[in-house]
Length: 488
Ligand code: AMP
Image (cartoon, rainbow, N blue to C red):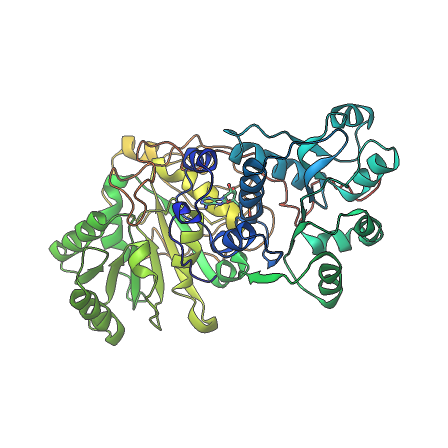
């Protein structure tokens, strides 16, 4: 994923109600697709985006649309819509509408969603007064148009989401029928996870002089890295880290903390244990950073402790392990972090220490990468009393002392964790069914300090993001979800 040049949503100069909604969602930093798309879309450009679900692409198109509709003086007309988002599946359509409602909750725009498989009569009735934003599957949209319940004449913005899925599901004819109904004067935003010739041709039919934006699929990095998570109380993490570092196969390791002070504390603790480590974060001078990086690069320092922001520029070869001493509250950061150990196609190992109040972060990460992270046993000899263990261990992922597996049927192997006192070689997380974990009720919070570079990150232990209905398959066709592949 490309690094974001914009570090704050404030840089977008969005309408105040939108900024308020983003703060309420706990979003502080745009994801790469948002950083690339939002300014272009706000400038009125057509956008051709290569991005998959999980990259934050919904907000990438929803925010500029809400901004544009909120700013313009026009009002919706009966049986018409001002913005239309075409989605291949009904699940994704509902999800997109939910996102619009969340981001637009302090605005007075009407948001509706229509798809097949349910009676059309109520949808016709609702559309009588028109909608500012309409999310639709192509089949049902055409049915509504055919029944004169809707016209696209007033359309200002069109979004075609997950175009490759649209074609896979046989919507090409529906889409071709829709094109001549669209007003010439409009903005179009087109997103697809892949861009084969057929999608390129379709994009060409919808877009005018588009800006191209692309982000690397998040799963690519995550799939190359062997991952594992240990449930451990915050207070036991330092002891666990020291234990894990006894493993000599950990040749060069990056340890991530959420805060600068947290990074310093880890270095101090390790020093007391006779383990030399250096910290790199925003409070360090350039000279100190270079010295730490130099020692890490040439192997004289085996452990580098870093915050997310400081780690951005780190490109060191041969990082065998990444340890998330604290889980990041922005799931993208997890992918960036573990990617440090999978440079240039190499594979690596990423271990995460998850305290009770970080479980929501873990859930968000697994949702983003669509990879369940195998649970590893905490090695013997890490000081923990029973009460604190119970605090760390979520229901359904083992009982009492953190154990291996814990995810029925997933078969997570603990590797050697718990035997040699070493770091434990976790199993590579296979792509497949999303971790079907019930909500642990875990509230992220962890450190009471601010994560570095996130001045307005939530500090009250509330989830950084609103809990969202789990997208059955993110529309990615991994089974289970019903689709609106037919015209109902
Ligand atoms: P999407 O790719 O649009 O489905 O988004 C994936 C997930 O990322 C959703 O759960 C969003 O709520 C979340 N998300 C989107 N943008 C951000 C952001 N800037 N910061 C934190 N979370 C985000």
